[in-house]
Image (cartoon, rainbow, N blue to C red; front, side, top):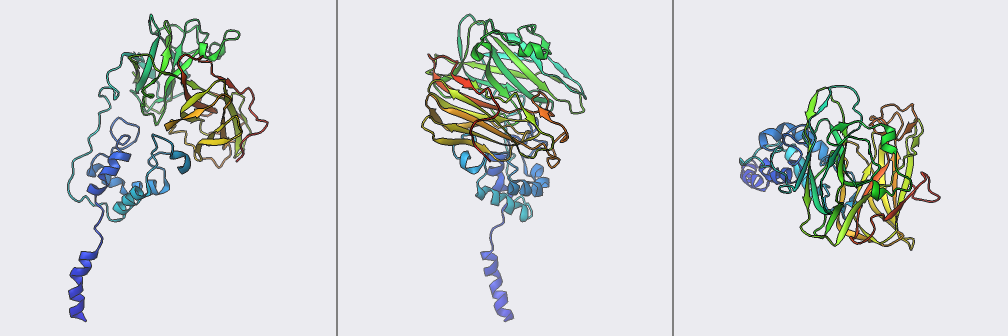
Length: 432
């Protein structure tokens, strides 16, 4: 018996599964983690080599099993149609788990993951126009009100924009920046001086000319928020900057205990020829929010109805710290309902824009319904104060419900393409 056991030992060793090494998981780390886990990016630690990654093995195991990393909040069904999905396949999850459970061994030495440095050139190439924040001084503490920067383009003819890319300088204090195209004669922060950082009052921001269409007031060119990645529009698609327009930055800085000076900038790429389709961003928003104190599942609903046919390109839900879940549905003129994106666990700290693999044709009369659920209860650990009724507001401890939706249509068509809801409660709508 002893002799048999001795004879079987080499066979058992030969049959034992090969341990998963860092060399095995390196492609997964490069594909799923490295873009954020590097110096100067949004993640708090770098994971570009075995030496950097090994101390975090247990944390990686826990994060991928709980599906908190890579950050992705849409459900599996709607993720199938999303081009930029970060949903990690189960096989990759199990490979990372096996590496951690097997002692997180190195295996054959491999080179560190090569990445583009944070201070390198724009990833989309050299821009045709660059707009730079002229050194905003963010204090260590306190509340920083929305700040505006109006920059004249000095364009003497209409220009089509095929792409735009942010280079964020001080990521730790930049909550978000929206770049708006302000056409000539617009009422949007019309009193703001040009070329200077300016804090506009509520009255200045809300003022508008009588019967002024939104497309003639301002148009969102591109926004930055945590989780942002530059993705150009389609090859025959572009946004429009009319001649004589200004670019207006709407900037939200947040303090974190350390003073900083920000020089973030935006690169703009002009199309070489007129596109077939014009891209615009529509923004159904619930400005009448009134979330009851302690309510764990408050529902807010807004919609936009298309005045003419269009194609759907991307979607981005936006709420603040009480945001719980979000869903955007298309309701077609024949009554069919299609859930475009379902986000069952919204995360304010990672606001994803969901780009479609294939644009969806939307006929005239289609309604795009945006439903957000909020947790204003003590059970929400991010809730600043569950004892208060919460209304619409700029700051994180206030709330918003905005559905940022990019659509494309014949460039010869009118940009005033939607009717937005003027009520916060539907006669009939989706439930949850």
